[in-house]
Image (cartoon, rainbow over all chains, first blue to last red; front, side):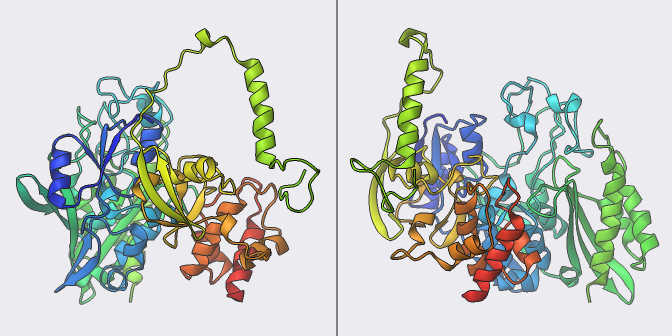
Length: 325
Length: 202
């Protein structure tokens, strides 16, 4: 691990000023410490934000507001989260291990780096780690990689589970930088790799995630997260699906759908959502909508199975959500 | 050779298994060392920047001077000589380094000590009280929740967390909530039985 200076600012303003001048934020550290030890990352200054007042979970009207420093385990176990947005709790528990969920913050979860093995392999080409060095995954072992949103420069998936749920729930986030605050949909945090895969998110230098806001609605309780993976727990998704349905008079009024494990960012499927609106929540409608999910898919040598697994996962998740009383 | 020197030991200075191993390995390493001029190193320049912090480890306050890069795991093992906590993967995947920090189970390899000034840490060494094993330790012995034993301290500390969190209600629940601890010997049935047994006793 390269040497660094650890800064412990007492105020959010001081933290933002430090980060705006080049320091890196650290909260749980579950991604960053690991990558620093591997020398994939080598920040010279770290800003420990854990003492800042950015934790906690609160309810404002029908909105659930989750502080950026709230830990994954804390959010998953929170009675208000379980009551108002059970999809968030379900997706969190499916991610990582109990120890890591006790450590990892919600803001850090959204900003975690990819799990592509070549990203960590210093002698392999990786445009995300070393721009211009190529992508070893495209011709390498790529069973875990993306089929949607890829480019000739990067095919890594975004690894978060809860980000998929937040995108499906149209969650927004509030960030603060040296020029003030702004709010935007969580979906807009994530960039497509294009020809600049080293740029992963849309935060400006020094911007700090303050909180995540999730509006409640009739869809919030017909919402499920299905994660398909090589092990029953503690494994990244091959394919996952977050589904929230609002059903009135036996007809789907609105479907919300996002998938993980297949996209270079948490992947909302607007075409599938549109196809489900106005349909009865039945298997045939689910299958017809799910077939649209792989439009534009670019499978690689080892991950062609995802082209079949993705619609199947969506159908099963829709059935699970439809079965919620 | 015995792990616990107080049980029985030959006359003369007491040497732990670890010290014996280190002394032996040191001799081998010295013998194998090439001439000094040939040992070019790519390690980063020594950083003199240290952080002073206080941590309470197994009920004892410790004031420590640490390199900001040191994990809690490394401070426990290398500075405090508490080698019960094991370094398995050193990347947060295996759970062998699990300890409780402020009552919550975490992987100590991914936790920088310098970020935990004032923390309360509990390790496997703190469980035995007055020569009596903790009920979960007893349960691991009774149910043979181990073979080689390397993962056991992490399994037990994680098991304490699992029980305290209320996730030890059934074998299936224990399997899911203990999945952050890998056992390469495959002693999982015994581990699950031990956690279930101890949860039932408390």
